[in-house]
Image (cartoon, rainbow, N blue to C red; front, side, top):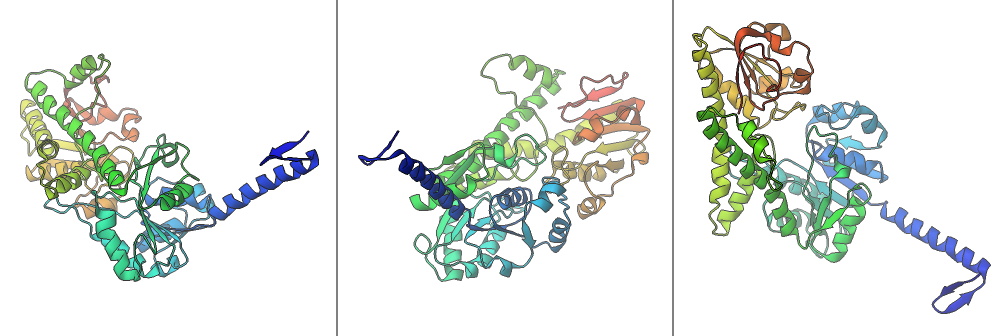
Length: 455
């Protein structure tokens, strides 16, 4: 037996040795790639899962967060966002720090800081700019910087690039490379995890794109999508969530229409869903860090290029107005129950921005609580995941479970599993009381004749 290489015939034993050599060379190349020294800036919902997955594959991974309490908790194996369990956190080899100087040895920087909006609904890039200013002095020739934070097209190259150049004294695209890879983390989702979601990647050159692929390819089982440009990847991120926002806005609008006519919206959706091309979005309060924020980034970009994002902003207006709609439903239930609103006992369950997560930032349920308080209601608030400290930061006092009894009106704003699985949960509501079930989580339960309302 022989092996043919470049038209040269070799003996079988030589072929065997060459085969081993090729395998060894491939392994050596792979090991060399994994010597990339990675720094992840921002250890929240996005950064922490990313950093721990990378730390399982690369020898040098350090995560930075400016919140000292957060860093200390992570060092103790505690992730208060519940995205990474203690075993993975402690065994991954991830180093965490709140000192920027400890990133000085990195060659591959990934920025995952928040990009919120201002009170005027404009993009707030101050955390991103601060991160660029912080890592700029650490950049060396040959380094790579990848953004994962939500931005509008142009931010990576036209905003972050110049800041990094200014604070490093280097030139982007020549001395160091830029890339963008939109995060797709779904907080609380244990099925669609980081490694199971296709990762969009982009960079400012073909060689830099290969480098980004070599890093993310080690941890993403679902595969990589190579975007033709950084701006396309940035646009994809804001489009993904704007599409969801607009579709939910449509469902919220029709829910108001059907509610006025005494028709159950979910029954209409179920009927319409029997058509092959109907997409069954559902109505609800739209908060959080993605759907309630990203459309404003796209709208800002649209206006900057002279376009008029009417549908995007109309959808935002509709979704932001749903808190008022729910508040009016609570008041209506109290009046039809012949209760004096200020004397009735109202219990609201769930104030985080989505089910089974502890985060209350940008939660519409928080806004609902404050609007109900303005009515002077005897309101009690409970959450199965939010900490008392987080609630107090939002000027809300959480009640004990024992206080959530004999309710005239029960508002299930965020239906955590702990509520759905709790035996006798609905028994906290008086027999002649009313259930406001925003997401319809209890619509198929036996309500014992109690009045019921859902979006």
